Figure (spheres, rainbow, N blue to C red):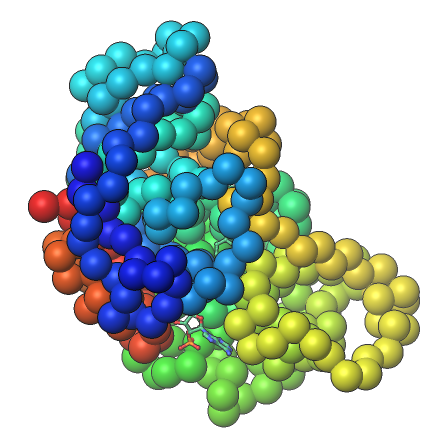
Length: 335
Ligand SMILES: NC(=O)c1ccc[n+]([C@@H]2O[C@H](COP(=O)([O-])OP(=O)(O)OC[C@H]3O[C@@H](n4cnc5c(N)ncnc54)[C@H](OP(=O)(O)O)[C@@H]3O)[C@@H](O)[C@H]2O)c1
């Protein structure tokens, strides 16, 4: 089959090429899917550079989300049949004509979603759902702060916070364009902060009448750490999903953790077991999926596609992601 491969196994954007590799076969409990569209994620860049620790047994081909047709069934699979239109969350391997994955990681593609919209959903929305709902236990009336607000995961988290009844949702980003866009979308941010020019902790305190925020979703780590601790209200929860600015902090006081009774939890998605991912997919499918439409739809939650590339232009697509230009998802078509 054809797939996007990496010359020398890892390296710069120029090492990505469309080549030939062996077609995978489904193991017991797995399905084989013929991929139509796949989504790009920040971790693809890290994996391409050799900086992403792959879970055991994961495909070395990039790509963790896709839409397409069921093209084969492993032993014991009874819930799917060949030709079913699906989308799903994979351990890797989506930058290819065919992919195998556990049958429980696949969802039926709703007819109101295009192939492109469906492929743009799994990684961002399942990550945001896990961080915000499962781990931080967001609830009606909470004040929420979402960093990297215009990132794929960020936009999903902002809208999910609104869907779950947040009182305010403050989003941070680096440019006025991104901030304006986050305020303009339905169920977008209620408040925004440019983290490069403003103190987001002070702004979050102002927005919440001095109380602070109940929930933070952070991807940034080092540069945001102290301000995150300052911004959290008593009994605040923070889920840490990335370390975009670095992973070390020099010196900080443990006092606020104790006295504000803070709960801080890191999380990953790709490293989770098939049983965990399958359970998360089921909860998301049953609780959230019906609220999601494309950007032109009328859903309470929408998936926003920044740009679509044919996979023959995968280098351009990675360049766009590395330049941090996207508001929403970058996706690619298998052509
Ligand atoms: N742990 C998990 O389970 C999990 C799962 C999926 C994704 N993630 C993480 O979630 C993050 C977002 O992923 P994505 O695919 O949605 O990314 P994305 O769409 O490529 O967006 C990432 C955004 O992060 C912001 N950013 C980059 N470097 C920054 C820095 N040093 N300080 C502050 N902001 C910075 C940039 O926006 P600005 O212009 O606003 O700075 C950039 O556009 C990544 O860190 C990814 O690794 C974690």
